[in-house]
Image (cartoon, rainbow, N blue to C red; front, side):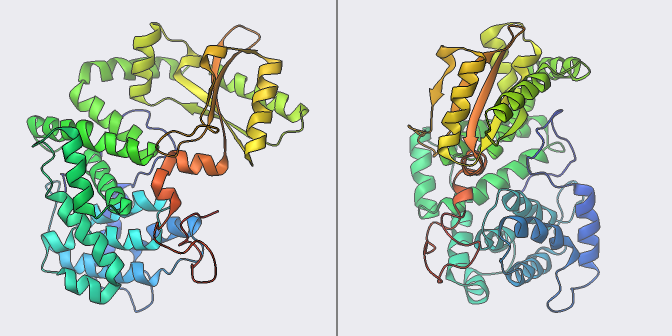
Length: 396
């Protein structure tokens, strides 16, 4: 299921996207291979995953992650990636990607074990006995999903097969997407023709899946990685453009400061961020607009507490700046099919430069970035004491 490991990544990868440092993984893996951690203590290799997980789910049970890692590491021991990395670095990296996106504990447990049934002597029954039927179901779904022939049929038929293989559980698909992202990040040691084949499947099947599930953080990085492999010349030109602008003053920083001033004066509490476009987005905007300016290379993101504040921010921006009405879209009143919600607008500042602005709540932003992963376990209770902290279907 894995690809080969390397440390390559596109220039300018957006801050905040999940990425594990493979140099640290080597250190973590060596520490784990020297011997098991004492009972109840987290092995060094899983400790970073656990810390990230606790940020999103403070009450999570980490002991199950420890047990899953110990089983995965011992089962995969002796298996190597073509890069020379211990194989355990792959499920660790996949699990960290999901932890960064806020996946719940059951998903992370299944992620650590997602290759054990296919690639080792561990059986589904053993997984079920040790970790419960839910983890067994997820691991089985990922194993079946790996057997789907992505290139054998048109896209709708491929998606139908994927749904059947996963038992309609979006958590299985989430693990598959994180698995593919890590494999795409570590594709550099493969032959160019194999890189191209995997990139085409990613473009035709996995990226549309990420879009349908609303997992923009995975979708955008997958798009950039595919872009670099399948369109190296356009990728190089986009890279040069971004490098050329990197040393110049950022007009979006001044625009952000102007917006902060307007909202502060209006008494609206908001976080205003500059949100750089990823490679494919810059390329698409360039095809649409021709020569790009500094404000075309990103957008402003305004985060507020509730829906009413979103519209209050919109009113202030349209009052204090010149709005570009054709750019206004209300995805809060009418969300996209993949749960995405946000207000989109564009305004012209004092110098006439047009700045695009996204306005959303913090919860909307979580869902925009992580999609279904941000919603947690779809089968967990949503009310009452039976739903452990960090395991609810609609976490606050």
